[in-house]
Image (cartoon, rainbow, N blue to C red; front, side, top):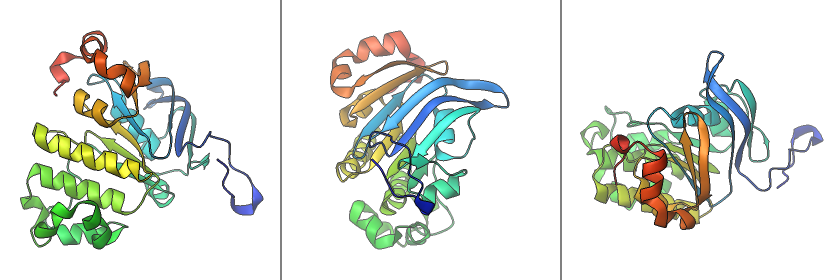
Length: 246
């Protein structure tokens, strides 16, 4: 994919990826937590990132989002070098949902949606279940409703790529399935999604590709279709059972 760049400079070729990281070493100070990692997400594709606690998954997302600068390596967004910082990357087409509830609890649901770049109407089209909750303070919503609000606000802005870190954390399985369906539906409309998830089975149900991290490195990657029949083997070989649900 080639997009015109200001001043006539052409972006790098990325094979159509909306987000691509190459040879990434990421950490805090000079000590890398993530080592020599490559990742690419295509439009309309859900890539699920799995791994035990401490594998470096959240650190990777922080670097891809612009919250954390990599020690070395490069990150491209929409075919050109990603601008520095989270705010600049969001303006360039990235949405980032960090771990935890990304809401303003003292504001109403409607006020939270208005703070998003996509506005209330677009968010309600994506998640109609929020309509009867518009006047309710966001802090009084259930955990699942808060995550619906977070997701709707993020994707209503029509980003090219969504980075989501443990979107389903602490939710009942039935709510996890519903959230995962919403993510898949957004991807089917063209959104690229890079999803860190502990609910392995639910993530595999909606993913196109899967990456498994352990101790800062990718130890397995394949299509979700190829891995769905190997969940038990994957958990036993790569994932800490004490941190898994699903």
